[in-house]
Length: 324
Image (cartoon, rainbow, N blue to C red; front, side):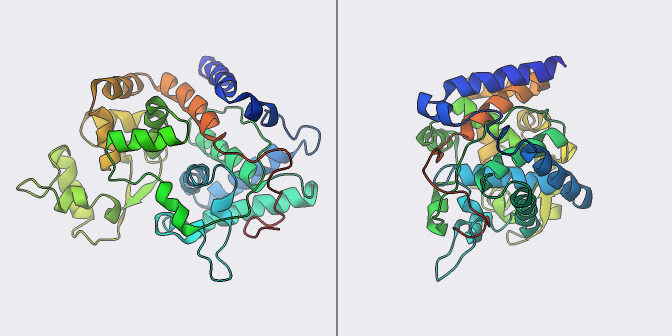
Protein backbone atom coordinates (compact mmCIF):
# COMPACT_ATOMS: atom_id res chain seq x y z
CA UNK A 1 0.00 0.00 0.00
CA UNK A 2 2.88 2.37 0.75
CA UNK A 3 4.27 1.87 -2.75
CA UNK A 4 0.86 2.52 -4.32
CA UNK A 5 0.40 5.65 -2.24
CA UNK A 6 3.76 7.00 -3.38
CA UNK A 7 2.86 6.26 -7.00
CA UNK A 8 -0.28 8.36 -6.70
CA UNK A 9 1.75 11.18 -5.14
CA UNK A 10 4.26 11.05 -7.99
CA UNK A 11 1.41 11.07 -10.53
CA UNK A 12 0.07 14.25 -8.92
CA UNK A 13 3.56 15.76 -8.97
CA UNK A 14 3.87 14.98 -12.67
CA UNK A 15 0.59 16.73 -13.40
CA UNK A 16 1.84 19.79 -11.56
CA UNK A 17 4.99 19.80 -13.72
CA UNK A 18 2.99 20.09 -16.94
CA UNK A 19 2.40 23.47 -18.51
CA UNK A 20 -0.73 25.19 -17.20
CA UNK A 21 -2.39 24.95 -20.61
CA UNK A 22 -1.87 21.19 -20.85
CA UNK A 23 -2.82 20.58 -17.22
CA UNK A 24 -6.11 22.42 -17.83
CA UNK A 25 -6.95 20.03 -20.67
CA UNK A 26 -5.50 16.71 -19.50
CA UNK A 27 -6.98 15.48 -16.25
CA UNK A 28 -7.54 12.29 -14.32
CA UNK A 29 -11.14 11.16 -14.71
CA UNK A 30 -11.53 13.02 -17.99
CA UNK A 31 -14.21 10.55 -19.15
CA UNK A 32 -15.98 10.15 -15.80
CA UNK A 33 -19.12 11.83 -17.15
CA UNK A 34 -18.95 11.15 -20.88
CA UNK A 35 -17.88 7.47 -20.72
CA UNK A 36 -17.44 6.26 -17.12
CA UNK A 37 -16.65 2.68 -18.18
CA UNK A 38 -13.87 3.69 -20.59
CA UNK A 39 -10.83 2.68 -18.53
CA UNK A 40 -12.54 -0.53 -17.40
CA UNK A 41 -13.30 -1.56 -20.98
CA UNK A 42 -9.70 -0.86 -22.03
CA UNK A 43 -8.37 -2.87 -19.09
CA UNK A 44 -10.68 -5.78 -19.88
CA UNK A 45 -9.47 -5.79 -23.48
CA UNK A 46 -5.86 -5.83 -22.31
CA UNK A 47 -6.52 -8.63 -19.81
CA UNK A 48 -8.11 -10.76 -22.53
CA UNK A 49 -5.11 -10.17 -24.79
CA UNK A 50 -2.44 -10.94 -22.20
CA UNK A 51 -4.15 -14.22 -21.35
CA UNK A 52 -3.49 -15.31 -24.94
CA UNK A 53 -0.05 -13.72 -25.39
CA UNK A 54 1.77 -13.17 -22.11
CA UNK A 55 4.26 -10.60 -23.42
CA UNK A 56 1.87 -8.44 -25.46
CA UNK A 57 2.04 -5.67 -22.86
CA UNK A 58 5.67 -4.93 -23.70
CA UNK A 59 4.69 -4.05 -27.27
CA UNK A 60 1.76 -1.94 -26.08
CA UNK A 61 4.01 -0.01 -23.70
CA UNK A 62 6.58 0.58 -26.45
CA UNK A 63 3.83 1.70 -28.80
CA UNK A 64 2.90 4.51 -26.40
CA UNK A 65 6.57 5.59 -26.22
CA UNK A 66 6.91 5.57 -29.98
CA UNK A 67 3.67 7.49 -30.36
CA UNK A 68 4.64 10.28 -27.96
CA UNK A 69 8.13 10.81 -29.37
CA UNK A 70 6.78 11.41 -32.90
CA UNK A 71 4.42 14.38 -33.29
CA UNK A 72 3.45 14.07 -29.63
CA UNK A 73 0.99 11.65 -28.03
CA UNK A 74 -1.59 11.81 -30.81
CA UNK A 75 -2.12 8.17 -31.84
CA UNK A 76 -0.22 8.69 -35.11
CA UNK A 77 1.69 5.41 -34.64
CA UNK A 78 -1.61 3.56 -35.16
CA UNK A 79 -2.42 5.02 -38.59
CA UNK A 80 -2.03 2.60 -41.51
CA UNK A 81 -0.08 3.39 -44.66
CA UNK A 82 -2.34 4.45 -47.54
CA UNK A 83 -2.38 6.25 -50.89
CA UNK A 84 1.36 5.95 -51.38
CA UNK A 85 2.20 7.26 -47.91
CA UNK A 86 4.31 5.07 -45.64
CA UNK A 87 3.09 5.69 -42.11
CA UNK A 88 5.02 5.46 -38.81
CA UNK A 89 3.59 2.00 -38.23
CA UNK A 90 5.54 0.65 -41.20
CA UNK A 91 8.85 2.38 -40.47
CA UNK A 92 11.74 0.00 -39.83
CA UNK A 93 12.00 0.90 -36.14
CA UNK A 94 8.35 -0.10 -35.60
CA UNK A 95 8.52 -3.38 -37.50
CA UNK A 96 9.28 -5.27 -34.29
CA UNK A 97 5.98 -4.19 -32.74
CA UNK A 98 3.73 -7.18 -33.34
CA UNK A 99 0.60 -6.68 -35.42
CA UNK A 100 -1.27 -8.37 -32.59
CA UNK A 101 -0.59 -5.33 -30.39
CA UNK A 102 -2.24 -3.04 -32.93
CA UNK A 103 -5.20 -5.43 -33.00
CA UNK A 104 -5.57 -5.11 -29.22
CA UNK A 105 -6.00 -1.36 -29.65
CA UNK A 106 -8.51 -2.00 -32.46
CA UNK A 107 -10.54 -4.25 -30.15
CA UNK A 108 -10.49 -1.71 -27.33
CA UNK A 109 -11.59 1.03 -29.74
CA UNK A 110 -14.46 -1.12 -31.05
CA UNK A 111 -15.74 -1.69 -27.50
CA UNK A 112 -15.50 2.00 -26.70
CA UNK A 113 -17.27 3.06 -29.89
CA UNK A 114 -20.09 0.65 -29.05
CA UNK A 115 -20.41 2.04 -25.53
CA UNK A 116 -19.62 5.74 -26.13
CA UNK A 117 -19.41 6.64 -29.84
CA UNK A 118 -16.95 9.36 -30.78
CA UNK A 119 -15.74 10.04 -27.23
CA UNK A 120 -12.45 8.22 -26.48
CA UNK A 121 -9.37 9.06 -28.53
CA UNK A 122 -6.94 6.45 -29.80
CA UNK A 123 -4.13 8.42 -28.17
CA UNK A 124 -5.79 8.04 -24.77
CA UNK A 125 -6.32 4.32 -25.37
CA UNK A 126 -2.54 3.99 -25.80
CA UNK A 127 -1.85 5.93 -22.61
CA UNK A 128 -4.31 3.88 -20.54
CA UNK A 129 -3.28 0.52 -21.95
CA UNK A 130 0.42 1.29 -21.40
CA UNK A 131 -0.39 1.93 -17.73
CA UNK A 132 -2.36 -1.33 -17.56
CA UNK A 133 0.63 -3.16 -19.05
CA UNK A 134 2.98 -1.79 -16.39
CA UNK A 135 0.52 -2.72 -13.63
CA UNK A 136 -0.01 -6.23 -15.00
CA UNK A 137 3.69 -7.08 -14.87
CA UNK A 138 4.06 -5.80 -11.31
CA UNK A 139 4.96 -2.14 -11.74
CA UNK A 140 1.97 -0.82 -9.85
CA UNK A 141 -1.13 1.09 -10.87
CA UNK A 142 -1.01 4.88 -11.33
CA UNK A 143 -3.48 7.55 -12.42
CA UNK A 144 -3.35 8.58 -16.07
CA UNK A 145 -4.88 11.90 -17.13
CA UNK A 146 -7.05 11.79 -20.24
CA UNK A 147 -8.12 14.34 -22.81
CA UNK A 148 -5.70 13.75 -25.69
CA UNK A 149 -7.11 14.00 -29.18
CA UNK A 150 -5.92 12.22 -32.30
CA UNK A 151 -3.70 13.55 -35.05
CA UNK A 152 -4.31 13.10 -38.76
CA UNK A 153 -0.73 12.80 -40.04
CA UNK A 154 1.62 9.82 -39.84
CA UNK A 155 4.92 9.72 -41.75
CA UNK A 156 7.54 6.98 -41.51
CA UNK A 157 10.24 9.59 -42.00
CA UNK A 158 9.29 11.23 -38.69
CA UNK A 159 10.43 8.16 -36.75
CA UNK A 160 14.00 9.41 -37.12
CA UNK A 161 13.20 11.29 -33.89
CA UNK A 162 13.03 8.03 -31.93
CA UNK A 163 16.07 7.12 -29.82
CA UNK A 164 17.97 4.10 -31.14
CA UNK A 165 19.76 1.28 -29.30
CA UNK A 166 23.26 2.46 -30.29
CA UNK A 167 23.06 5.94 -28.78
CA UNK A 168 25.27 7.28 -26.00
CA UNK A 169 24.24 9.17 -22.90
CA UNK A 170 24.77 12.66 -24.36
CA UNK A 171 22.72 11.83 -27.46
CA UNK A 172 19.91 10.29 -25.45
CA UNK A 173 19.83 13.25 -23.10
CA UNK A 174 19.58 15.66 -26.03
CA UNK A 175 16.71 13.73 -27.66
CA UNK A 176 14.72 13.64 -24.44
CA UNK A 177 15.46 17.32 -23.77
CA UNK A 178 13.91 18.21 -27.13
CA UNK A 179 10.73 16.59 -25.83
CA UNK A 180 10.81 18.53 -22.59
CA UNK A 181 12.12 15.60 -20.55
CA UNK A 182 15.18 15.54 -18.31
CA UNK A 183 18.10 13.13 -18.20
CA UNK A 184 16.55 11.73 -15.04
CA UNK A 185 13.30 11.10 -16.95
CA UNK A 186 15.29 9.35 -19.67
CA UNK A 187 17.07 7.04 -17.22
CA UNK A 188 13.76 6.28 -15.53
CA UNK A 189 11.84 5.60 -18.74
CA UNK A 190 14.66 3.35 -19.96
CA UNK A 191 13.52 1.02 -17.19
CA UNK A 192 10.72 -0.09 -19.51
CA UNK A 193 13.39 -2.42 -20.94
CA UNK A 194 12.81 -4.63 -17.92
CA UNK A 195 10.10 -6.35 -19.98
CA UNK A 196 10.02 -7.52 -23.57
CA UNK A 197 12.37 -8.87 -26.19
CA UNK A 198 14.93 -7.55 -28.68
CA UNK A 199 16.12 -8.79 -32.05
CA UNK A 200 19.81 -9.63 -32.44
CA UNK A 201 20.23 -6.89 -35.02
CA UNK A 202 19.57 -4.26 -32.34
CA UNK A 203 22.75 -5.14 -30.41
CA UNK A 204 24.86 -7.18 -32.89
CA UNK A 205 27.40 -4.36 -33.11
CA UNK A 206 28.29 -5.00 -29.46
CA UNK A 207 29.12 -8.63 -30.25
CA UNK A 208 30.77 -8.48 -33.65
CA UNK A 209 31.76 -4.93 -34.63
CA UNK A 210 33.51 -3.54 -31.59
CA UNK A 211 36.94 -1.97 -31.99
CA UNK A 212 38.33 -4.39 -29.39
CA UNK A 213 40.49 -7.29 -30.54
CA UNK A 214 37.74 -9.79 -29.74
CA UNK A 215 35.09 -7.78 -31.57
CA UNK A 216 33.04 -7.65 -28.36
CA UNK A 217 32.20 -4.37 -26.67
CA UNK A 218 34.52 -4.25 -23.62
CA UNK A 219 31.71 -2.75 -21.51
CA UNK A 220 29.69 -5.95 -21.98
CA UNK A 221 30.14 -8.73 -19.41
CA UNK A 222 32.16 -11.52 -21.06
CA UNK A 223 29.92 -14.37 -19.88
CA UNK A 224 26.82 -12.52 -21.02
CA UNK A 225 28.45 -11.77 -24.38
CA UNK A 226 29.24 -15.46 -24.85
CA UNK A 227 25.63 -16.35 -24.08
CA UNK A 228 24.36 -13.76 -26.54
CA UNK A 229 26.70 -15.06 -29.23
CA UNK A 230 25.18 -18.50 -28.83
CA UNK A 231 21.74 -17.00 -29.31
CA UNK A 232 22.91 -14.73 -32.15
CA UNK A 233 25.63 -16.77 -33.95
CA UNK A 234 26.08 -14.14 -36.67
CA UNK A 235 25.62 -10.37 -36.89
CA UNK A 236 22.69 -10.98 -39.19
CA UNK A 237 20.82 -13.37 -36.89
CA UNK A 238 17.14 -12.57 -36.42
CA UNK A 239 16.69 -14.36 -33.11
CA UNK A 240 14.70 -12.74 -30.31
CA UNK A 241 16.22 -12.54 -26.83
CA UNK A 242 14.87 -11.11 -23.55
CA UNK A 243 15.99 -7.55 -22.81
CA UNK A 244 16.18 -8.38 -19.10
CA UNK A 245 16.74 -12.15 -18.88
CA UNK A 246 16.36 -12.52 -15.09
CA UNK A 247 12.97 -10.81 -15.20
CA UNK A 248 11.57 -10.92 -18.72
CA UNK A 249 7.94 -10.54 -17.62
CA UNK A 250 8.49 -8.75 -14.33
CA UNK A 251 8.30 -4.97 -14.13
CA UNK A 252 10.97 -4.42 -11.51
CA UNK A 253 14.46 -3.01 -10.95
CA UNK A 254 16.30 -6.04 -12.35
CA UNK A 255 17.14 -4.00 -15.47
CA UNK A 256 19.23 -1.55 -13.41
CA UNK A 257 20.90 -4.34 -11.47
CA UNK A 258 21.93 -5.84 -14.79
CA UNK A 259 23.48 -2.58 -15.96
CA UNK A 260 25.63 -2.48 -12.81
CA UNK A 261 26.89 -5.98 -13.74
CA UNK A 262 27.67 -4.78 -17.31
CA UNK A 263 24.69 -6.72 -18.63
CA UNK A 264 22.83 -3.89 -20.29
CA UNK A 265 21.75 -5.36 -23.63
CA UNK A 266 21.94 -2.21 -25.75
CA UNK A 267 24.62 0.45 -25.90
CA UNK A 268 21.82 2.83 -24.86
CA UNK A 269 21.35 0.75 -21.70
CA UNK A 270 24.97 0.40 -20.60
CA UNK A 271 25.68 4.07 -21.30
CA UNK A 272 23.44 4.99 -18.36
CA UNK A 273 26.40 4.55 -16.00
CA UNK A 274 28.88 6.56 -18.07
CA UNK A 275 28.80 9.64 -15.81
CA UNK A 276 28.75 9.82 -12.00
CA UNK A 277 25.35 11.57 -11.88
CA UNK A 278 23.68 9.07 -14.20
CA UNK A 279 25.32 6.13 -12.43
CA UNK A 280 24.04 7.42 -9.08
CA UNK A 281 20.47 7.22 -10.33
CA UNK A 282 21.00 3.72 -11.73
CA UNK A 283 22.44 2.65 -8.37
CA UNK A 284 19.45 4.14 -6.53
CA UNK A 285 16.96 2.26 -8.70
CA UNK A 286 18.99 -0.96 -8.49
CA UNK A 287 18.83 -0.78 -4.69
CA UNK A 288 15.24 0.37 -4.29
CA UNK A 289 12.51 -1.05 -6.52
CA UNK A 290 9.80 1.07 -4.84
CA UNK A 291 11.61 4.29 -5.71
CA UNK A 292 11.98 3.17 -9.33
CA UNK A 293 8.30 2.24 -9.56
CA UNK A 294 7.19 5.59 -8.18
CA UNK A 295 9.55 7.60 -10.37
CA UNK A 296 8.49 5.60 -13.42
CA UNK A 297 4.85 6.56 -12.85
CA UNK A 298 5.85 10.22 -12.64
CA UNK A 299 7.93 10.02 -15.81
CA UNK A 300 5.18 8.23 -17.74
CA UNK A 301 2.67 10.94 -16.91
CA UNK A 302 5.18 13.59 -17.99
CA UNK A 303 5.93 11.74 -21.22
CA UNK A 304 2.21 11.30 -21.86
CA UNK A 305 1.83 15.09 -22.07
CA UNK A 306 4.33 15.58 -24.92
CA UNK A 307 2.83 17.61 -27.77
CA UNK A 308 -0.75 16.62 -26.98
CA UNK A 309 -3.70 17.82 -29.02
CA UNK A 310 -6.54 18.96 -26.75
CA UNK A 311 -9.74 20.96 -26.84
CA UNK A 312 -10.81 21.53 -30.44
CA UNK A 313 -7.48 20.47 -31.94
CA UNK A 314 -7.20 17.13 -33.70
CA UNK A 315 -10.09 14.68 -33.77
CA UNK A 316 -11.53 11.56 -32.16
CA UNK A 317 -10.86 8.83 -34.72
CA UNK A 318 -13.64 6.30 -35.23
CA UNK A 319 -11.06 3.81 -36.54
CA UNK A 320 -7.60 4.15 -35.01
CA UNK A 321 -5.96 3.14 -38.30
CA UNK A 322 -7.67 5.77 -40.44
CA UNK A 323 -8.10 9.54 -39.95
CA UNK A 324 -11.75 10.55 -40.11
